[in-house]
Length: 286
Image: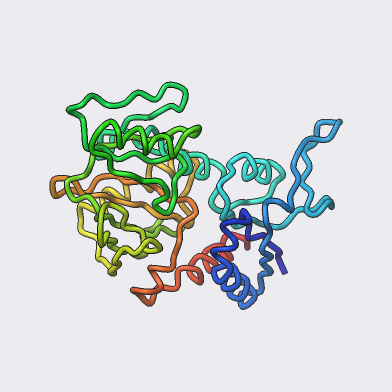
């Protein structure tokens, strides 16, 4: 029986224990052993002779595979360099968990006007540029995503983010509405439309309304273009979310979620995305 790690930061694990337990149980049904491991249990580095090491709870040990639900690309790359496959891989982790890198990498696809803010020289927009949306480059779950209407609000929003870097974006004409498309091993498998009840934050955990959605031809083409760009760069989207916003009636890139949540998908559909993911993973381990 192959043994893998479901890897979490402590804070994320506290919010996702049901997910972790379900992954462990479904893996067992497929003759796989999955152990939920916290990143704090691991130590990585290089021996004096130059060889990499990975220790779990003080012991040198390697799993057969890793399902990464953490956002440290260095850790993922370290595990990969020791010969252990990681889903999603380190390249996906690096590109998706810094929103500047995501937009830079996907330049050429439809997206909102976006400025990459730096904490060392944060400069407020010109008076005529408002409203804008400000968010941390590593934000997820709607954390500190703020629509600002003037320089005072802008400075308040940026102060909440500092000393981290931030993103500043044009406000979509259909602000408060976005589409999450779930991607498994390079294929779109389901989509959920999210709508904010108030303001611009549509995330399910923050009270957004959700509904199953069938992709239009235009939406599917954009999602596939994102998938293809990642695939060509050696960063296949194996269990991820591609989020689209809507501006002037057309879909545009929102972001790409490496550690994608699935609660809302289970709420609005019969798609068992965890089971589907584990089936695909099992095929790739044979």
